[in-house]
Amino acid sequence: MREKGAGFSLVELLVVLSMVGILVAIALPATNRSILNLTSSVAEFEANVRIARGNATGRGVHYRITLYSDHYEIDRLHLSGGAWVHDPVFSVQTSYLPPHVTITTGVGQSFEFNSRGLLQAAAVGIPAVQVDVAMHDSHTSETKTVGVWPSGQIIGS
Image (cartoon, helix red, strand yellow):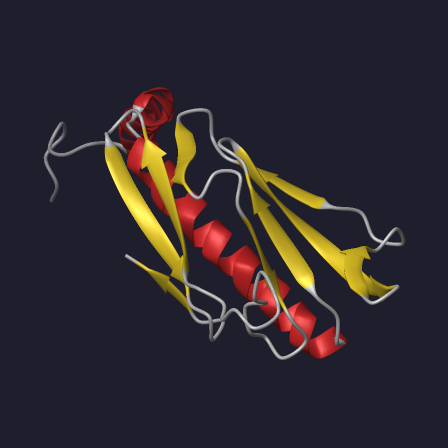
């Protein structure tokens, strides 16, 4: 036979679990997520560059990515008068970075994927060069770099 008072009742167990759940819910938003913000920002940038490259090859048009300190823009281009210009049918996709993550290397640059998925050269007769994009997290002082090769390959560090 079981002795009275030995162990916990179901109600006591549920009350304790509820209190632990409330404490976790309060403490979770206060955890340091800044490293995740830099990591996720870099991963999102790499994914968006890959999508732009895939769209360029799949749709047979050019895509341009322009870098700013707090965001980057992806623009679909069309051929007009022998030059690739903004396609007015499509809006420019703007991706903003978290407040403490900034682009430090590559600001002001833009690079373009041609319909074969290669980086478009800046001028005829000059080969395309690798584009390096560095993102810096001011909370952790960590920096991560993404390289876009002339072949279109995206390499993160």
